[in-house]
Length: 490
Image (tube, rainbow, N blue to C red; front, side, top):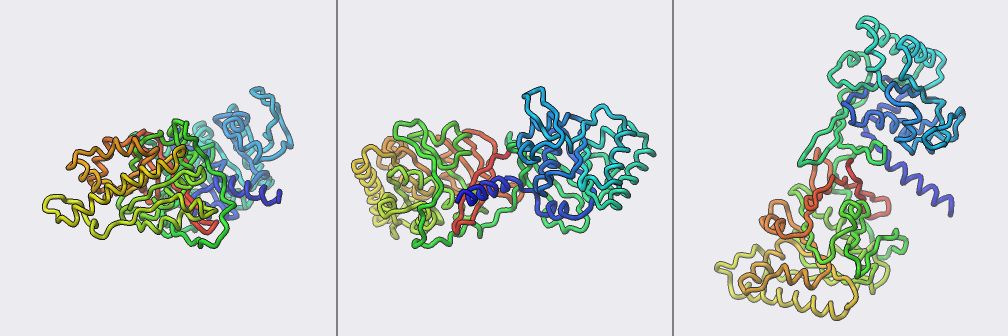
């Protein structure tokens, strides 16, 4: 049993290491030369170290650092200490007193270009290192004249090919094209700002022998590891779980207490960003871009709902646009273990008479009656649920169309829906499409506003109020049903 747990932890750790599929194909080849370009702060060093980790190369590499000392590398990238393993030749770190493996890392900050170049060629000739990373080549090349630089670069390429080695150059100047025609692969790291949010993007310019299906990916440098994200695939959000499967092995979820000021979402990364979770007695607006399947919101809400169920707290689920209310249970089912937990979820089935847009001008009496009954039924259910669960949290989820109908009916009859919902529920979530007018209306009065959006074909969660960094939507279907994990884009 202990072995299985350890194996599972290792698998979770390795999932953090993800570089673009095309680049992974390229770096797995026996020999190549790769140029990594990018301005300062884009993550070139992080990517080069992550390539070592992705290839699981813990020895037989030669990392030449011309900018910072190897001791600083281990300080800035703490995972290197465990990844590289016990030191063969170690030096004490005056910053912390620890020992680090520096045998494969070379401090070349004060080296002359000639001696450093000779050391690299010696490594290639002796085949001591299958991977040599020069971070950065600019610092070496700047001390050479143009003719000497071109000659030395050709020599490195020749010896690299003869030795069957892998050579990675790091360049601080994306505009410098001197090496472009010599190397087998070129990738460039860049960053831009969208709505005051920094977005990092890797561009695959050249990878000889590899078909580049997707020329660019969004990536993050969270925890000192390069992590790129794949394209959004709606089919990954389809649940295949049957109710006969045992669900008592679901991971522990974060819970909240009725006296807390925040309600845990079940997504710890999001709770940290929000300062503790969803504010209690708040209305949360969740918006979906028009090209995102409704199954995404069902998968996302299932984990939030499961937190309430685990606390024996009731949930009121009203119709969400484009979503069959009964289908929500298929996504929530994996988190449920008893019939009593299933009984906590109360689903409002839509009235056939109340279908369509809510336009009260010229509305028939039958529809008016339907809206009135719906509003009264909602009011009665909340009241009875409060009486049945006096010391529990109450979650209310509804779609934008349903909210609009109730809001319009309330306004005509002098009833303000928002104060009523806030006073009688602990958390209300309203789900709308980006194109819906109700979204604009709710954005001004909701306590929190998040949006599922796509950037460069990748799915993200963006918090607009409060304004935070992006979270990538990572989907896991290994257990037979889709689970969402949020990863910060930093």
